[in-house]
Amino acid sequence: MASNSETRNTYITVYMLTVLVGFPTNLLALFAFIQKIRVKATPNCILLLNLTISDLCFLVFLLFKLSEQIAGHWAFPTFLCPLSGLVYFSTIYTSMLFLTAVSVERYLGVAYPIHYKLRRHTAYALFASLGIWICSFGHCSIVYITEFKRDNYSLPNVPSMNVCYDNFTEKQLQVLLPVRLELSIVLFLVPSLITCFCYFGFIRRVISSPHICRNKKQRAVGLVAATLAVFIICFTPYNISHVVGYIQWKSPDWRIKVLLLSTFNACLDPIIFYFSSSAMKRSCCSFWTRIKGICMLPPLLHKLFNRGTERTGSQDQMCSSRL
Image (cartoon, rainbow, N blue to C red; front, side, top):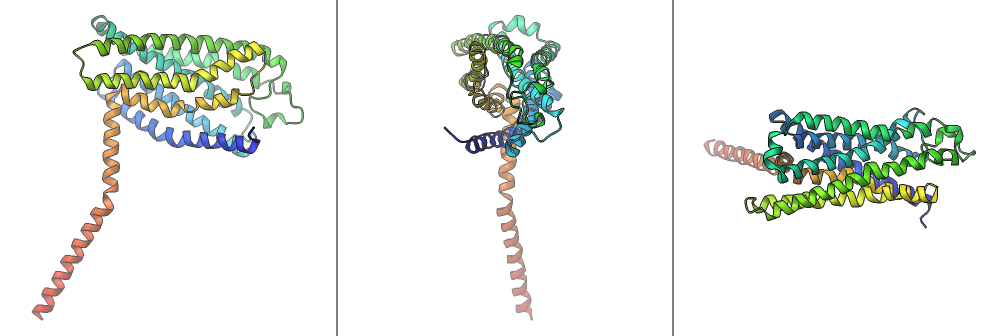
């Protein structure tokens, strides 16, 4: 079994890797979707924009988790603990729900192209996005109920201000465990089944269609594979811990370890953006072209400098010959 120092180092490494990879890729996606919406707003683009905002919020409050692991205790003001927990856990479920909404939008566009095109309005996507935010934050408000009862913590030797959303008592678990079970059913199991149904129907119709080119079929397969990978790797183990915790009537010791897998969601979502949005693909290509241009600047400057020295040397030779 790994020691506490090794466990902390693992958490710090995963958190830092997620932040360093997640922030640039999601900011690139945010720029691409904002530019796309300025030209023409579509329901799919609005859903992906909200998904990007959710990931960025997750990454911002992941910095609190990173600082807590580095310091070894909660070193911020008390009111930030429930706020960071609320945003941290809520954005995990908002990402899941927005991925489900994207799968529904994709499936309807392929299964019922004519009827859906006639009824496809951005206002529906806006209302759906608002409902997802309210649903997720409303369910995860249980963090405030548990965190404001700091006198109920089970470790009397640990000051309450040094502990954030950990070491629950039996009284707290009586409220927390049923809510976690409800979260795993309503916000994970149901969206997972909807996503699987929509994407299996989506990929079956896309592959069997002779009017869709091979490139678009490959993008569709990549979209489905990336989305299902996020559900399996990032969301499934964490929500299984809710079910196991309710059956055993205690918070599993390995829950924090599978929760660590959920942080990779912010890194894997940009892959979904790349396959699901042509705007994101163009933005990535444009960004890569600019990077290559920046990398080519030193050789160009070197050539210009050499040309300058060659011209200066030739002029000096001409002047000396004239003299």
